[in-house]
Length: 183
Image (cartoon, rainbow, N blue to C red; front, side, top):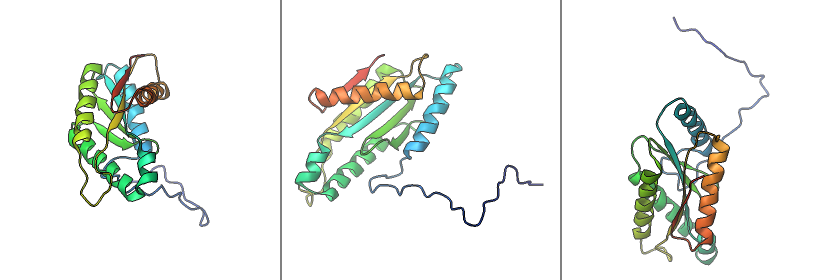
């Protein structure tokens, strides 16, 4: 017998909030909310003796300048190419998502810092080799990547702040590079 549990009826005038429509470049990746939930769950599992955990943030260099000089369509094509490259580079247990704005995130359960760095460098190299079709004025792009490994004394917010800091430093020091925040 199936029983309904935890059902709450809604008044007729109450509407269900609509989630933001996926961006044109979200080719099978998760929303920021799904990523955050998975990160929280994986951190809890790791603290209970589970596998180590690393997070990457990936951003196309100078995307806003490309948008201003060329077009929104050109930027969307770059983001789509980066998303497909990210998905092709990841393992089955990894979790790719949109992060904030045009930043993509990648959760690497079971990865230690050296493994995450190797993954970031492979991804950075693959992105640098991407070439958009000839119809786009700007056909190539580079990415900057921030990396951090979870530490026992931090929560989700602290881990994300460290990864964001490493991405910021990558942008400040020349772009087309990977920076690690080792805590």
